[in-house]
Amino acid sequence: MAEPKIKYDRQLRIWGEQGQAALEKASICLLNCGPTGSESLKNLVLGGIGSITIVDGSKVEVGDLGNNFMVDETSLGESKAKCVCTFLQELNDAVKAKFIEDFPEKLIEFNPSFFSQFTLVIATQRNLGIGFEPIMKKEAMTCQLVEEKMIKLDRICREANVMLVFARSYGLTGLVRVSLKEHTVIESKPDHFLDDLRLNNPWPELKRFVESIDIHVQDHVAHKHIPYVVILVKMAEEWAQSHGGTLPLTREEKKEFKDLLKSRMIGLDEDNYKEAVDASFKLFAHQGISPYLQRIMEDNSAEIDSNSPDFWVMVAALKEFVAHEGAGEVPLEGSIPDMTSSTEHYVNLQKVYQAKAEADFLAMEKHVQSLLKKIGRDPKVISKTTIKGFCKNARKLSVCRYRMIEEEFSSPNLSELQKYLTDEEYSMAVGFYILLRAVDRFAANYNCFPGQFDGEMDEDISRLKTLSISLLSDLGCNGSILTEDLINEICRFGGAELHAVAAFIGGIASQEVIKLITKQFIPMAGTFIFNGIDQKSQLLSL
Image 1 (spheres, rainbow, N blue to C red):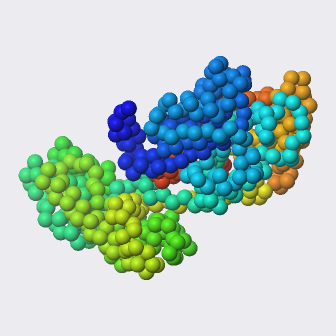
Image 2 (image 1 turned 90 degrees about the vertical axis):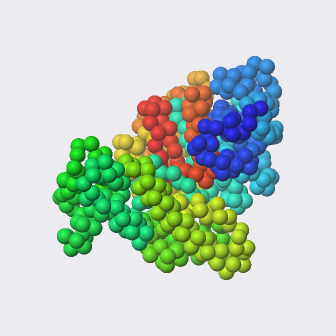
């Protein structure tokens, strides 16, 4: 067995030691280990998740051999949960793996407290077997069993503060949906975010450093090694003095400012001035905090008490910092990008930013400790490392809240739903969403999936169409919007799970699980729909 740092080297570079530690402490429960669920767990097991529990009461059948790579011919007739669990354990012996030979519906109905032991539950659906027994023969079933159990499971997990991810593949389509009350993210790691340089709002120490450097020096070597941060701050001051104290605002003024920068070059090889021109947009960036962060600071949860999560305690401290020491700004991040500069200038500039970031952290730490004491908690319960991480990412905080499945099913966002149905770009995705719900009603009513049995295709198409129109009518929409071709295609799928689609959906689901457990990156808010016919992925906010 390789050392963990070597074994997980690539992923440690993405979510770091804290993220990996969170994964290794997490316990995951998978409901139904068909191809979608098995592929989801495979990715998590390889990533070093702490423990997994597989719940599935079905046996391995011939049909499983064609779409689930975690069973083989020797598994026929054996417990599917046991076979998949054994295979996954071989992939990473550091992961604790166990299985329960029972149908998830029974646990949801008769033992809801079972789910409270887990960090997160991944719920997948059996397409060729639902309810308490595999359904290759037609027998009575409870109406709308699938939707009812999804709604009940969602309620159970929310009450126990357990995160829940639904994942499903069905023919050439599939979906993923995250559900929990609230998810807060400190390290959201956006793809694009401006460096926190405060060029348009320099603090006294940065001003003094800038003033100590002469940007008009005639020595060419010295001139071309002045950091662009210094150039921009000085030139901004010069501009403001001749323009009524304001920075460039209009497009014409910004172009004029760039031309002014270019005019100060004394050689063609001055990369620092070229960098200043390219980075001049950072000078025009919005000062203070963003409207999104302002909403987080004004959230009711920022009014803390003894039961408040650490995140909201730090948000309350941030609010006080912005109002006092920050003078309208969040704590400085303290890092600077690489730039053309002499080593001396760069190191000294780096120290200026680091010193400011450290001072801001110390002020934030005092606010956090004071608030903790005020609400009757240990002032040191939130570690310095956590507070430092919060300060570094204060501009990028995110709060995600999710509607209950029951609310989405009974009263979706009607304006959004109607917009999706009439928008050519989204009509296929929302069509799949509606039809997958209609498929579950079909299965509950007729004890099989549309197109599952030979010789019943035409009748199944008519039945599914009636159910989908009825579903849309219940939601207050026109059912005739769904195309005949799409309804025919869903019936043609016959409830099959194709491995390629299941692997893709499983990959998306496991990616969302990692986001939720590590509290890094922002999880999806809405229902993710994969359209394998057109090779498109879209997110529906319903």
